[in-house]
Length: 308
Image (cartoon, rainbow, N blue to C red; front, top):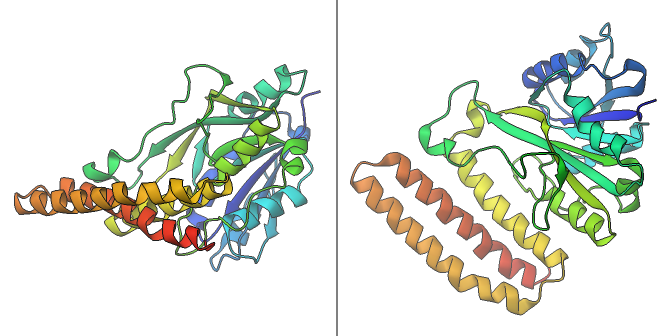
């Protein structure tokens, strides 16, 4: 028998996209009695619960769970506690998958009779159903960690939008860190980094399975200058927080301040020059990079003072 699998989808105020995701999840060609779909509603004010109910008659009906503590990692951890599968597969609420996606995701675990593999990441391909400005497109692309299924290298971290764990491995390292999590108004990332580092430290393997591909829908709201700028700022902050959790010394953090100050200044000047000569897209890209450096400049002093 194949291993039992729980697909866990955290969601917040994304009912339209969730409906499209569930349309592809309920048609998986994995044995129906060996997997479940758990939708963790992170206190959504929209019709999320009703959307889940629309699939009550599907071959594999999803289950709705409410988590009122705000933050994606609270929702992910609630999904772990509410699920039963030996393998836990996490996906975003705006992914589209092929019928063989789950089977491809689980295949490395099935072949690993020694139990060395703790986690498997699948490919994530961004798509833009509502269009995408050219200047934004350069910030997105497939992970392409390797061309075939196999172990990842140190420094390579598969994305949580398409990521699976053996239950015993994830529970053994304490689940997702709720102190660093995406929530309304914040775009903290690097949730995967801490987990990956802990698993590797325990001697476990992290694999990449490129055939287990998802299309990650990027709506128009994620291609605006305001969103991309904030994402860059918060992503930089989360990298600093993650580095501190590794035990980074004050000297390391301080050494990053001058470089990021120069980058912030240089990219801001480049943005102004591009704006003057009418290259608006290049100006926006330079400003996003300047904001990323500002994220480092903001978080490094906070981390030196013991603050997140």
